[in-house]
Length: 335
Image 1: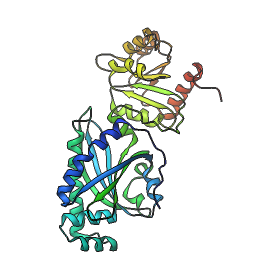
Image 2: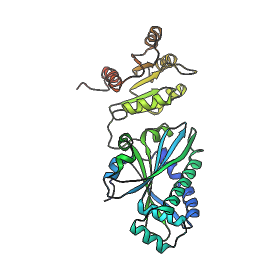
Image 3: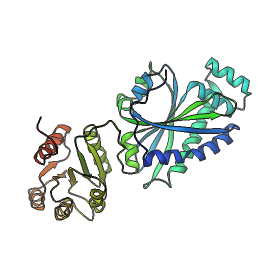
Image 4: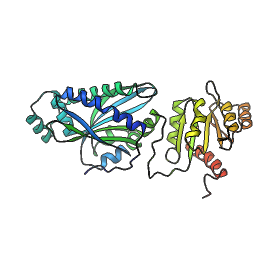
């Protein structure tokens, strides 16, 4: 049974960048396997690994690539067991007939397993070299493990959070000379993928309650807010307060969350800028701080903030504050 496309986002910078790595991957994988290697017909879907795996009876080999330096998370390379056997056997320079026989029997062990792991390590290096100059901030990819995964063992291979978080899965047709077509699959957390280019990868069927702009120099706090709000709101983020006003020229924003303590331009100063700007003077602003003082709260109110939040905050508290002010500004209607 083929995996259904759960949600199909439109083309994005992330998709374009990942696809742009394919020529390098095809060339280098061709050298590794001594076969013509092609990746064609990319399709990006938005789903969870739990949904992806449970909708098929296929067993996969999942290679985990740690995403390090500025970005944090994991990128997965996913192949069926049959494809892994073919690739591993090609690196061992076995005859095509023997490879096909082993693939049909599902024999994936010993030297073949080690060879496939080396293949994924090489692909990790290819992606690392290709993505580094294309992303706005530093990245490093490192292969951490390869494992068999299917419906029966998915909960032991991956945590419940990893299985059920929303992910972007890029699937392409993989053509290896002399063998049946297979699939080359890349999977990345939606939160991390969107963070690459500070973009929101929208789905045609998704209806958001509103758009929130979050300004905070802490990438960890930006991730937390996106995770708390992303299921209900379109969340735009920036760690550069100087670029916050320019976001309003590109996107309609219904509410702004601003951290107080930021270098160069603090949250109070930025709030004052928003109030002086004709495009943003009426947008509700909530100021946030992990160490508020009475003076800070007073300054925030004088600068034009509608409310104040103390970090760390719960999802319920954050939603309640946002709902209150979006109701007041008629973005949300009373239920």
